[in-house]
View 1 (cartoon, each protein chain N blue to C red):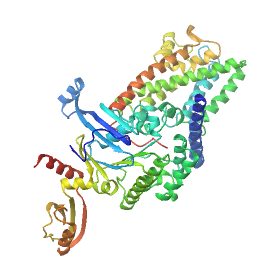
View 2: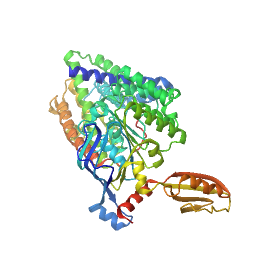
View 3: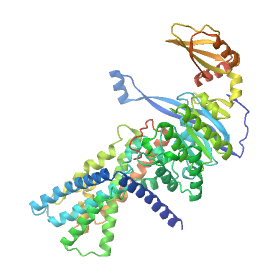
View 4: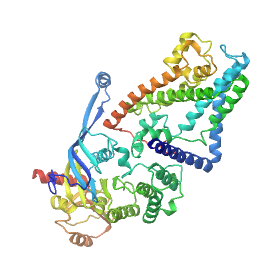
Length: 282
Length: 339
C-alpha cells in the first residue's frame, strides 16, 4: 500500500512538472520551439557526423552503417532522457550546490531524491531528442532485421537505465566537489558530462584494446552507447560480460552515494557562504 | 544574560526549543603578500566564527517573537538551524516537538519559511502557477488550499497579482506573493528572515498588519528577524536579542526600554546655513544641513521634544526613528558592566 501511495505521489509530482513545462511551452511557443529545434539539430549534427563517416567508409571499425545508426539511436535516446528529466539543474547538481540553492530544496516536504527525480521533468520542451531517438531506433531495427522479443525490449530498457544511472552518478560524483569549493566547482558537472558527450557517440570498435578498456573503466564513455549497443546486437566486445554496464552502474552509484552523502554532511555542518538566485526557477 | 524570567523546565506547549546550541563556521584568511600566498598553499590560515555560543531559549505556541541583532549576529544561522538546513556543532533543537535534522520532511509540512532576499516563486510562471505547484508538492487537500488561497488573496490583496509573472512583480508585490505562498499549507510556525528588507512604507505596513492578524486570529507562531527596531516593535510582543552569538536580552520591548532607555534618533533637516539651537540630546552628525541627534525619550518625552523643535527657525524636515540595534545592544552592555 505504501509503495502504491509513493508511486502515486511520484506520478503527481511528475505531472505538475509536466504541466508547468507545457504551460511554459504554450506561453512562449515560438521561443520554446526554437529551443527544441536547436537541441534536436545539435544532437542530430553530432550523430550524423559519425553516421556520414560510416556511410563514406562503409562502416567503422567492423560495424556496418546500420549498426552505427542503431548505436546513434541509443545515444540519442539517452541524450533525450537526460534532457527530458534534467531541465532543472537536477542532474547538473553542482550548479544547485555551488550556488547555495540546496536550501530551497530543504524547504520542501520531500526527500531530496524524490525532488531531484521529479522536478526537472519536461516532456514537452525536452522530449524532442527522445522522440527522434525512438524513430532512429525503429528505422535501424528494421534495417538490421532484428527480431524484437519481449526479452530484447527489456534488455534495451535495462541498458538505457544503466547508462542513465552512470551519467547521473558521474555527474553527482564530480559535483560533490561543489560542496567544498562552491565557486570553482559550480560548473564541474557540465564539464564532466557535456565535455565528454561528443566522445561517447563514437564507435570504439577498431581502436586499440587498451583504449577501449580505458574508455569502459576509467572514463566510461564507451558505456554511453557503444558497449550497450553491441550487447543488444549480440556482439559483446572485449570478452566482457554483457552484464558489465549493469555492474559498473551499480558500483559507481554506490560509490557516488557514499561520497555525495559525505559532501551533504559537510554542507549541513559548514553551510554555504554563497547564494546566487539565478537559474533556480525558470 | 538578562532574561525576563529564568525557565527551569520547558513547558509542553512550545513551538521552538533550543538547548545549549553552539554553531561555528570557519573562514579562510589570506592577505595579498606573496609570502602569505605560499604559506596558504601549505597550511591555510583559518578563523573560527562562533555564530551561536551555547544558546538556549524557547518559544511558546502562538507567540510572536522578534529575533533581533546586528548584521552577522547569528540570526539567519538560527533560522537555518531551526529549519534543518544546518546542523549545530552541539546542543539540541526541537521545532514543533520534532528534530529538524531527523524529521525534516514531516516538519516542513507544518513549518513555513521565508527569506526576504530569496523567492520560492517560479520566475517564468504566473503567481497562481507557483501556488498550484506548492499545492501538489505539499500535498495540500483541495478544501484547505481553496480556503487559504481565498484568505491570502483577500488579506494580502494579491488578487490582481495572481495572473502576473513572478519576474514582473515589484519587490513589495513579490514579498506579498511569497508570503501568501508560504501560508497555503497552513503552517503552525512561521520563520521570517528579514521579511521587510527593501520594502516601502506601504508594503511594509501591509505585511506587518497581515502577520499580526494571522498571529492573533489563527494562533500561528511567528519568529521574525530584522535589524530594524521600528519594524520589530510594530510586530512582536517579545524580543530576543542576539549579539556575538549569545542571547543578550529576552523579554518585552517595555522591559528593554527600562534597561536601555527609550533610545531614539532624530534627524532634523535645516534650511541653508541655519543650525537647530535646541537642547535635544547628543549631536551625532551634521552633514549638508542635516543634523542627527541621539535622544532618550525616557528623559525627554516626545511632547517636549516636538515643543522644542517647533520653536526652531528654518526646519525643513524632521524624522524620528528608533535607535539602531547596535546602539540598543551597546546600552545593554553598559547596563551589565555598570559603565
